Image 1 (tube, rainbow, N blue to C red):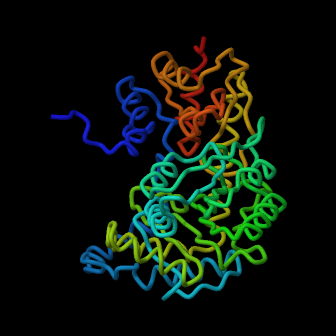
Image 2: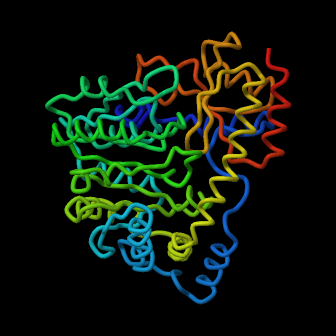
Length: 387
């Protein structure tokens, strides 16, 4: 009998780098700066809301298939409040089991064999896995070096008659880049010229720093009607384990996503949906302070990595700092990450695992700074022994 029953198209995705590095972190008793989850909880009032919902029976049974009305209304109000987008909570929003399910449902609904899906490389590893599941062809367009910004000319040259969809991610994981208005406008021109659909992964929409304000591409002229926008309660409120996400956009596109999503998890997380609905209505001060606190941690880790001799790519958003390790004399990020865990007891993620074959990002490594300041300080201290 055969030993590997996994279908060939999914074999490249059989082992996640996050599983490998988390296992390595456990085995070596390392500080895990690899995975993007905070080591502190989000707002207490959201936890209180979950407990209240459970105790009173709100959400303990199946919620409505496309999400509680309270959550869909809160998402609609959030899009209006922050981006002046008008979306109907009944027809233009669907709640999902995290942003990853929103992404999967959108791709499975909108592309199939013979289509090409284009995106900037390096990219979150789930992208390629789901594109392969859909039968479409993934087409990665390398970000420009050294500071990992979108290369508009390369994007234009990569579009073919088979290109159906652009998968956009800003604030961008893993680079930490926030695409600016000029870059987004140039991307939008290409999208309109080639009549593409856009899935805009905005899971880190509230995690931008300094003047690098997040701009949804759907707010640009001519873009709303061709965009599915994906959001994440876990990232915006530091409850990644609750797995509450959503997709929003024009009715025809959202209808397609709903049709597929109902056959994935069907429903999930009733009490958590209601808590995230409350979170989306928190005052501006919450979001401002959230960014300010994370910005301090970004600066702490960036300074420490610079002191160690790495070149730090400017971090404009997300949970992540990216460094170029070549000044240390290393040329392979994966080898460096494995060495780091065994020698220094710190785990990071190499960019090369997020890239297409042939795209050379071996000198870049991603570090998560959404940790307690004392944890970041200890990680830097441990890495003083890098050799």
